[in-house]
Image (cartoon, rainbow, N blue to C red; front, side):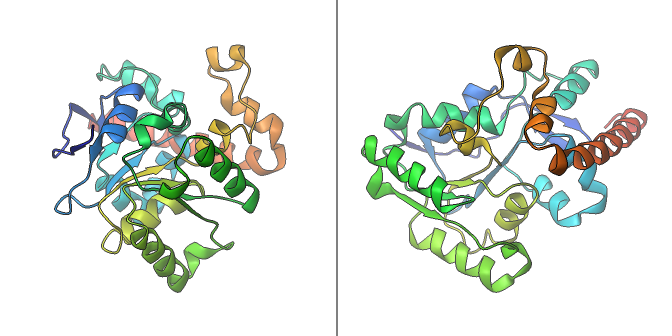
Length: 260
C-alpha cells in the first residue's frame, strides 16, 4: 500500500560540496516503490553520480544546480564509494542507477500503484518496455517517449516532453537518455512536471530489460564495469573515461584539502 512521501531526509554526509545519502540500494528502491510525492513536495530527483558527474561539476553550472537540489544523491561509481569510505563517511555500498532500476523492474507488483513514464533511447527499447508492462499488467500505467537527438538543446522539445510527462499523471519517471542531460532536464523543468520520483539512470533500464549485456560476475566483483563498458564501446568511451578520471582526481584533491 502506498503512502505519501514524507520530506525524506535520511542521514546524509558531505562530499564534493554536496550532501550524499547514506541509504542502501534496496532502501532507495523500496522508498520509490512505496511512497508518493505530494504536490507540495513536487519532483523528487534522484541522481546516482559517478566520476563523470563529479568531473563535470566545476564546468557545468546546470548539473551542479541539479545535484544541489536533488532529493537524493548516491555513490554510484566505485571510486566515489571507496573515497567516501576512506574519508570515514557512512556509505553502505555502491548505490547504482542500474541496481535501483533492476530492483524495481524485478518487482512489478510494487509498481501497480504508480503511473510510469520512461524516457528511452529508441523505438526498440520502447517495444521491450511495453512488452514488460503488458506481461505484468502495467500496460495502462506506462507511457514512453524517445526524444529526438539533441532535444536538450531545443527548449521547445524539452517543454513538450515535460508536458507529456505531466499529462500522463506520472508518479515515477525513469530518465534513460544519459548524463547530464537527464538530470538537467528534470531540474530545469520541475515546475512543469507532476509530483513524482525522477530516477536518472542512464543505461540502467536497458540493462534491466536485457537490452545490454550485464558484466560477468568477476567483473562486478572486482569493480571493473568501466573496463567492461570500454570493451563494448571503445571508440565512444576511452576518451570520456580518461577525461572523467582526471577531473575526478582533481575533485578528490580539492575535496580532501577542504574536508567538505
